[in-house]
Image (cartoon, rainbow, N blue to C red; front, side, top):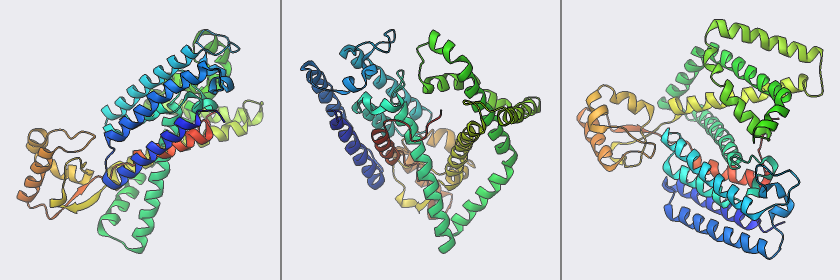
Length: 391
């Protein structure tokens, strides 16, 4: 065990603390994040000092963490290269968190927590799946897997609770969810086929072009290859709705599977097809659960006088507000991913009461990203890589 266990433990404690405050107070405190940044700064200084005295660090166990792009795999690790990777990872993590906040996928506190954890966790935490351009991609990947598990768990609990103590709101939600699945069955099947085809193409190109890609680009890990090919082929999934695209792809996919079964190779066989199929189902499952949660199950009824700033409106409430577009576009305005302001909450409360909408209003329960980040941090530290591998 190297000295890196200290910042890893600190990162787990910070993630756990923020998860608790988010669950109890629906808030991630900046003071906790500032403490995390301070720990990260002290750790980097201590790491440099520890290394300068010739004591063992992660660079002795994983020397590739301290090499430059152009170095050979057998080059001696350099402290400057390691610090440059740390700085680059922190910068990309900040951009990733900001992008997820900008597109409304999570709140500012979640984005800041992710960036802080990325700086606190040493690069050796990702040694089992190290991707030089963005090592903390592992943390992000494990976090979204945790989100999927938490959403499935919540839906299962709500289903059992509805069976034992049914309510009108929950019954309506489950009917809406069932209707949505029925109406999107064809689209889901086509989407699965498109994702399966995408994975098969990527798997094949990885085998055929592995040498070309690694010789001409700095992307040498399986993660990097997958990521690059996703950028190229992802627009294909949008075209799957058109028959002139979906029919040839369906034929090619069936032919691909038949060929792999009839003429198996060590790299391409029935096991490979099944593995890729599981990955495709996982992608589709995440999209379905995420869509249903956001648009159907993400609601909580509260009294109108309990409406507070930082709350996010459920889809039911947003639909009810559309009867007054002047309110939506002018008086209320856009509600950001961090919830309503004080003025927006007061404006909505007055409008709701003036229109006689009743004593209750539906707000969003929000996706539990802070607890998911805690789980993702635990998985990353324990496993040193992905919970589910893609190769």
